[in-house]
Image 1 (cartoon, helix red, strand yellow):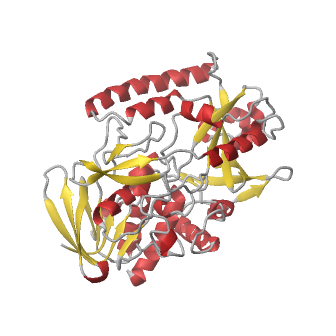
Image 2: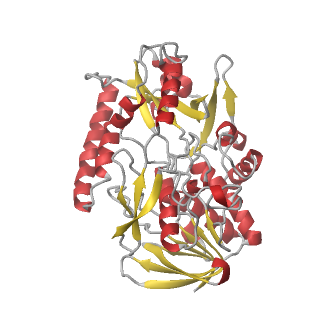
Image 3: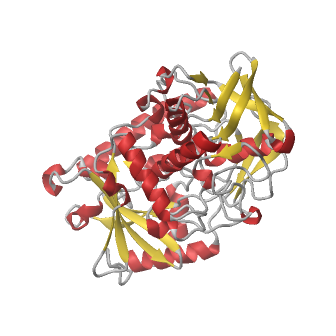
Length: 474
């Protein structure tokens, strides 16, 4: 079976690439471990990870559409201030232009606001705005399954790549986990990995020889914590940065304002923090860290049902405004950028294999002392003794709250990052893997730095940029 492009992964990157290239009449194979079957109970267990720290919990939607299923439709583009903290091999205007172009192609309203920021006139922070689009699962929204020139291979994974000269991928062997059948997909132009911040290095390390030492390193994410006690009388002071789930419940108080999501962003020593007013600490964050470590699908189903009732109880407590010990009605949710650390990485386990016979991945991830100190400085500046959001006598509480909150893992980035030189990157400015001829990577794994923004729209923007390159060079 001959295809112009073989794309591995149907999430935000893979679906945009397949859609853009199919519209240009290329023949596409779209391969994904997940399937289109509707799940009665969501199960986010990541099947190709063997070991990771208890405070790092990546998720797997097991749906065609990837983690866009979990996205909540936030059309945030990484801001220029975030972009400038990393070494991107192209300028921000190119990213912004691709964002505007994609927003028009997808008929998203007010595309100019996709890059909107607003400096506060009294403090050293800015407001970062996003639109909320009218779709969630990008695979379904783009109607990928309706294209006659896109062949979808679900429940499948690549298990071998056949190479020609100069590491030119000539074909890829994929295996179906339901019937164990193997199929060879011949490649006319290019192979593109779009399997996410954990999946991309996992597959590249298994399947692509001669990759450099940077693959899997520099894993970055967004540590989240909830701090401060905000009562129902105070929260109106922060209505500009209310999370949408709160705003939707109290429109009679905040008014029916623009359908925008806003975060306040502060920078300290090249570290960024975003903050929004949230409900009190969510018990599901702690339950999720246990849930994602249980290999038995039967036990996970039971816990998922249990989690449903816990969520409902938590919602009832919120609505009644009850206070139990340290369980307060509102708090600030902070989410931080992360500096580049080689020891934060995805690497292969030599003893454990997944259901396709590939080596599983192990994960090392933690928050460095340097980042902890910067996070604490930011917390003290924003919600400390002289805090411009709230004054209170609290210091150095990042670690105290971080491990209580359930850690991180929702936005893995930077594991196959792009750069100017092969010495400090995995892919070049066009997202081609160094030392290969026609193998590309797209997704948050190619970010040189993670910033604080939900990465989904930036991923889709990079996919739009890559589709244009591949259509002429591919």
